[in-house]
Amino acid sequence: MRPRSVLWLVPCLLALHNAEEALFFPRYLPFVLSRLPAGWQSVIAPLTTGQVWSALALVTGSAFLAAWWADRSPDSASALWALAPGAILLHGPLLAALLVAAERWPR
Image 1 (tube, one colour):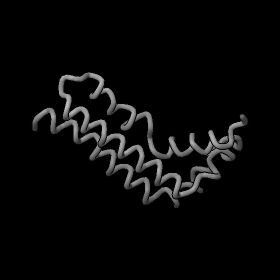
Image 2 (cartoon, rainbow, N blue to C red):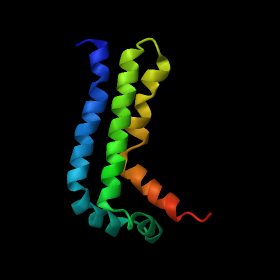
Image 3 (cartoon, one colour):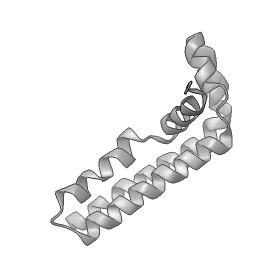
């Protein structure tokens, strides 16, 4: 497999993982909420399925965009490093929880 082909595995595997989370999130949320401390429950509880799906789509799309950038600019280290946030740091449910928390944050 060529190195440029391998970089496309990141967004493809992330899309597969995010699809699994999109399918199982509605059933898994009550399980997670029951095990969180009360302070965290108030942050996560208002999270809707639509918000999670939107966050998952945004993260997945960002990973494909970063892979496209890295594919078009093979000598760019920045392009390769752009895959890391989409694949690791901006995980869909985490992003959705942060967006909900930001909406409730006092200004």
